[in-house]
Length: 409
Picture 1: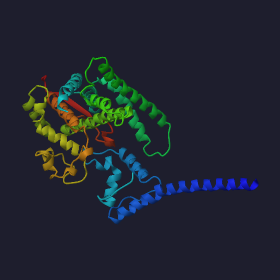
Picture 2: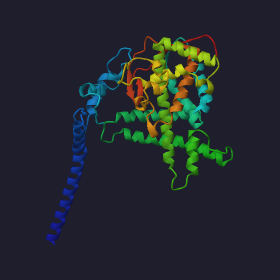
Picture 3: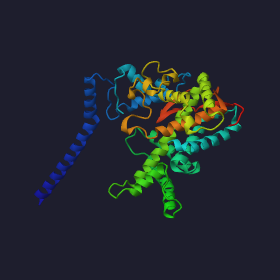
Picture 4: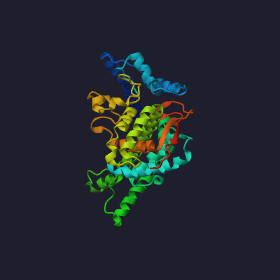
């Protein structure tokens, strides 16, 4: 009996040792062997980079550089790369450029209606300082709610606020390897976002069931719901997949256009000559009328300004820090010498951003309607401090002055 007990204990000990050995081997492979193996292969090809630190990789060094850069003021210049991505800037200077490290046209009326609502509010603020980053956030939120989800901004506001909170929480915990108190809040917010999107989806379902509508809508959400109902059981996506697609479109569609419009107005305020050229083009095409799809295709100067805003602030190539919309005068292909990978603000290939047209149409409509009504100037209180947070954001906001051109459209 004692021998049997002894054998059992030996087996338990061996089992524990085997588990410990396996776990240790996995940790060794993941945190030491694989990173060093990758670094060796890269070095053998002439691609150097910062040395790997056990477990942390290069995250601590990058976080320290980002924190330090965000506390320093900078001049009003387009050379923002050292501030926005100081770790990459430092590593490029140290290791070279070859380095690695661990770590829709039918919607124009809806966009016009949203921009008109915004500009109506601006009438009481003419000549006064305005925080435009927040103004454009409200605008893009309403546009995407109307055009992609058939709902008013009041319905979408709750979702946007929750998504912003979720983003802040994610950024706070990006370098942590353990669960934090934020995770409980994240789960609650994620559930509320799910419930909010499902409410909008249910409205579509109910209208079709009651005969109030004969389809689920021709916008983004309507297409998703239609695909969900038409697919067979085997190929059907889950409800969660549908919700996740809505969340992605909601967030990315608002975030990208907001940043694009904000920085485009800053650049127009700085480069008044190009602001005058753009305004002259808008007046020539639309006079005092609102934007339409036919005229939108004729806004070549506006298109050039949008493209150069999207290009800035890529740090590599010739005269990269210069605001030169004319480089896109003959189109993107000519500007990039037919190298598609040289300019890809919306990605490249089959996985490129499906919202590219969505973004460009919003930006063209908003900029043309603003230029019809106002001149744009930098406020004396504006502090140039771009910051990388998913998209390029102004650390201290964007304060501009809008002076009326003294006629209504």
